[in-house]
Image (cartoon, rainbow, N blue to C red):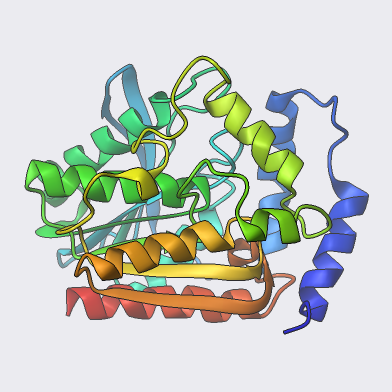
Length: 306
């Protein structure tokens, strides 16, 4: 399929608004947070509150959406941004919408970011938050024993790793919601070459994210906690809903992970959004099909918890 016209329009917008290469990372984060509400577009309000949960290096901020009068299933959500940018603010619209459409309590996790906090800081925070929610769901309006994990891009990477850890720890998960996830540090896949430039997330930028997260010579990028596709065994993990975008450097690794799960007997629903680019999921203010992807994700959660 050809590139979606709205996706093309967003790429053109981004090329005129992207921060210069020398802009400090703290400023990049601030600018991303500031732009997120406009890019997401109108969003129905959902009751939410901020709190913190204990983590390996201190308290981890979280934002809890949708806690009502009756206990509900819980989705622990990890934002994308290459482990470097992104926040509970940048993904506020995504999490509020998922909570409203799915009927779940959504816990959005503010894990530590690279390069200040390289691997495995993000993984350790994500796993600590998942464990806390599994043990304390009732404190946030959740229904104990009814838990899912999810995230987009690098957040999808963290969700996949947490699903593997949950299996090993005996924590049952109803679903892992993986939105164009980072699954492998191999940058030689066909989609990395085919969409290397001109489709929002470039090969150069993705390599820079990996360098910030696990600098060359300072860690193993192929460790399963960084590249879940390299896990020795994926059998027995939670059922997966995997969403990919056609014009995305990460497309092939996400689909390879879905295939590997399926081959191991894990129930998998794989949905490629043709004509779409990386990042479209949080852009319903500019790309209509983001609404379809959010609705489809919410349906997958409702069905998993049915």
